[in-house]
Image 1 (cartoon, rainbow, N blue to C red):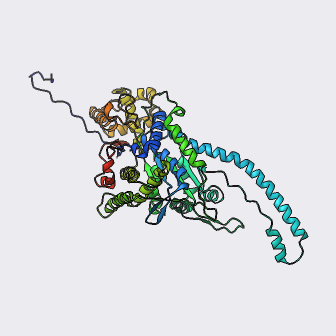
Image 2 (cartoon, one colour):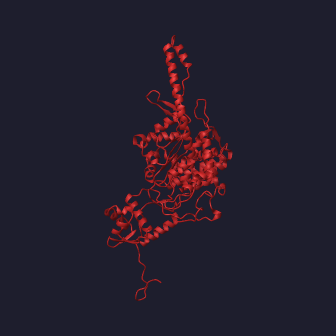
Length: 559
């Protein structure tokens, strides 16, 4: 019953100041369309999601990039006489502790096995080469010592000697290369390689990203994505070299604080470097990954995936008469070409002034080509002799997701460190039921960020009071603003609660049906930024994949 005063009049409810947000908001990421990856790749990604408990996009990025590396030496997508490499560049943003390494290890198990095989065989090959080289040099020296007659006669006698060729460098996986090191490996080693790093910040923050090297590194990696020939011109004898047909796929995982610098770097944007990447920034699952008894080695989906990767990695790639990589053409069937044209034109229509994709013009401009690249990877993995319309439509679904994700991540906002710490303290107070407390008790029994010093404790409390998350009358005793509690509860309900699915609506490639739905804690994906549920700008982007509307039911309704 509402409270009344002595005269029986209703006592008005107390009013509280409206809390001010501590952190900028970011739209929640859309679910990744795992079904569009197909049974093999989608099944492998789903198995990784279940075994490692990582976001769907993180697992999908690992699997798709790994598949691209395995497929890239065996085909080029062909459209109107143009040959398009199947190499893919992926960039995933995930916080420390989001199990990036565990997901990548499973996605790349066959690749690492192949790397070990090459290293083992290289030891024997290198020894045989050294022996043959020494013998060749000895015989050559003897010929020169005993040579008589004209220079032409001596040259003819030397020409009869066969100089041994060194074995290919055994590396197919790189983590932190300089551009020069990567080029040298491709020139003198296997022509198809992968750049995979679960600590991509070491790559972006290392030698390659120094101001004097950044432009060269960005331009060089962009050319490798394009499939352009590698040419090195050096003053030292024997250091100049050239090679065509090399292929490189990449998957770099970086933390949010690095992502802020990378995604906002004008040089990387201006050179079209970032536009070549398929970027994902999924919501963290930290706090909801309770122990699950799962052995991925016994999962048939991963077993089939590893077997297919192993076969492709061990298969000798086709070469031309010069011994250079020459992937065969993978044509588009007529219906697939028509579907691709529709997709391409839908993207192009939104790149103009006022278009929904104008903010991500460099990325969207490469959307049509990425559709072909992904479709080519899927065709090789699934042993299709051509890119069919269903495969093309699935690739269009995936690119549509990446364009929506790129729109969501346009110009990610930055949060001040003291605001991030204040938000963490407020979250801790709510999670531990500290509705009222004293400052000195907080420093004695509170979280580490409040126990560091009285000065830091007071600074954080002052921020929370200033933003109306806490109320105080004397600066010593505090209580949580009821209005802030209500706001937090509403946000948590709308932003983090998983979709409710009944048995008939359960996606077999997701894990939300394995356990009863629970409310997850708020994630902070942009350097601990909070997520809101403002719908992504998909009005025009939906047209990008309108060629796949007919496959809505077939691929799980991601459209």
